[in-house]
Image 1: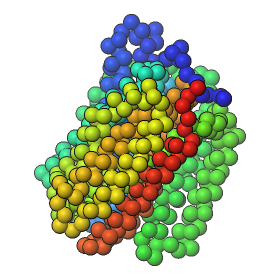
Image 2: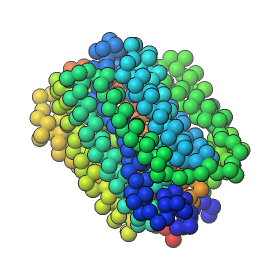
Image 3: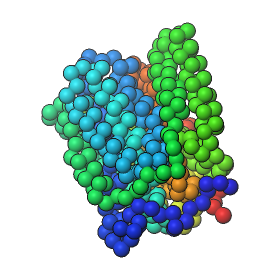
Image 4: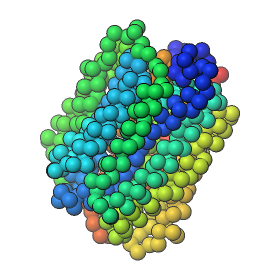
Length: 471
């Protein structure tokens, strides 16, 4: 089966000629990838906590608040594939640095935004920067480490991202309460400077001269299809939102995505989403699981802070701290989960983890108006955290192991794109929550929670039915 093997001889970054005898350089590569990816992780979680403050600042409606998230997730989802393919073509270190620079500059633009339209445009730029840096930071790890060592490295990467996700909402919420929401975007600037400096110094990944072009047509079709899909889902979830115009947009979006698949088929190995990757049953199962599980997780990160601030009158700091159990438990357990999966294979943890996540979502039904966080919400978040810890690191490692080293950029780009697409679709479907208030807000929350639990169970079924141990 093509593109489903990897060997130690494929390593090409920190263990290249100039780094082979410098083990400290390998550690700096891992540090660089962690700092770069943390930009995207922190930004996503911090903005969720700041939604209510942003809405009050610009007098934004519930639908407009959804776009504060979607304006970032849309280009991130649509361009991740292009970002991974660009790294394979031009060199992953170069594209990583481009992404970091774009993310840092657009973060500054977000901080000084004079209007909601300005903020949304800058958020879209952030999404473009994240689409360049995320798949290439992960592909660099995949090419630098191998076998069980790769599992530990990816587990460390996941754990560090979780820690960043833990610190971000709390620090961001505190800044919102103390200074205002604009300060949360300034958190990205020192990280961007540190990550780009380390990347320039320690990562060596020359361009692939064999490829002559990147898939611009495919990228445009994917972006168009996802944009129209997101808009129709966002508008359609609001009462009376479905109309002939939204139905037409949905049709055009579906046609665009169909044309995207046709373009990818024609380009073959040069496509940003090479369809031959799907000759691997494991690759298919892993990506279905990614779409479903990260969709449920993305909804959780939006739902909980919004409900606590709007329905429970929590401060931004308290709402950010409410999610601490998830990243803390992930941070502690991800490295060990990656190591265990490297020994026993990913199928068992990827099957059981989402089932535990589903149970945690159902426990959230106990949280209502006037409920105590410690008794009604904390146990649910702990259960969800344990389930995610069992799945996140094994999932990432399995995706990298399912393709050869020459296509780790494309594979990680696709997997990351599906993770963000899951969050994008989930956010687009939360219109009923954003439009509700009072007791109706909690009713809409319960519906969303039940859907998330069902989605997690489907993710478990995909892992059980489609993933198999490597031969």
